[in-house]
Length: 144
Length: 128
Image (tube, rainbow over all chains, first blue to last red):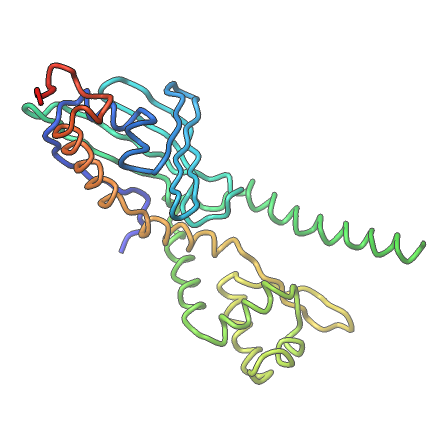
């Protein structure tokens, strides 16, 4: 099995792109089918969030692409990693008219990011940093 | 895609498949760096078995050996390979089928009940 970097799904929806677009890009839409509650600043670089009240989980997203009514993209936190982990996956919805309805494709990519040198440096730096700080604390307490 | 990512994930899953190795990793995660002797005192595993498991964990990059007091080697947990395995699991756990069928239901419902959906074109409203 190949390391999955990318997930792709396509669905045919019996509703015009404008309606699907509204469901994907408005707080009312996202809060109705995706999360339980949502907020969105619909512009590239804008922030968005969705809350799942049952799970007590909030997803923070950053809007990346807004090309009404065809492409909507955002990045978000990688499920399962610690909250403060900087790595994110990119989600893109593509809407194409299909008869009276819409062919909607969602791709989510970026799962195969390796901890890069920067991350390793930061992590090892923190580990060393803590060892030093604790050593300094011990020395301070010994001296006092 | 980095070619070694899957190999790293596989080593992590192999390491975690053994209950004794899970106990050793859990002990290092909760208690910090420890020697094989420390671990043998805390876990129901012989010192010889612990040394064998630590060698495998070091091979997988999940622990690193460092010089400790009185020339005894201490083992420290290294989480980087676990981050790789975690991303492998995250891709498997990310479920788009559920949300997409919820979207389909939402669109069907809002088409049937136009008064409740703000995005519906007023021309499509049925007269009561």
